[in-house]
Image (cartoon, rainbow, N blue to C red):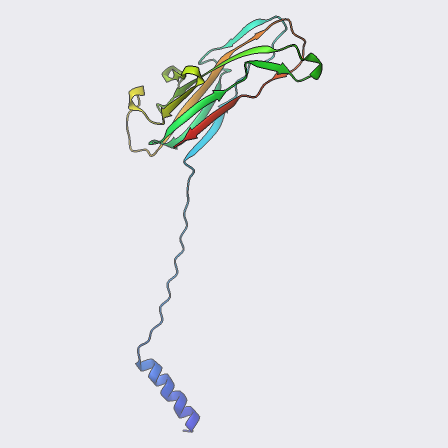
Length: 178
């Protein structure tokens, strides 16, 4: 055996006898983080087409045209809900500046985990601090971490002798959570 082969043999023998073993670990970690709150529109508030001088048009709690929002949140959360609505709807045409339609909206919430306006309570002055899950409102406790809460928007408009056209206003439903 030549000298280079013998040195290579002893180096390989030394490495084999020292017991140095290399280990490798691989971790494939995937996390799915769900948001703490999701909101969706179940049905939009719709007064439909109204005729000049038609007077007051009501959408009552439970009517088919009331607005419905659903909130999915952790059952331990508390929400601050407020409805910010203008007092009037104004014409989109700039030449009709004096005309306006009075708007009166109200909001009720149902935190019993069911979409039933009969189980809802009206928020005083369209705002309030509400627990997502509260047994006092008739719901039974269970092990679900997520709860569904429903918000109902309803009210009235009063159409007097105004010019024909489209009238609009910005309505904001604000939901803050802790």
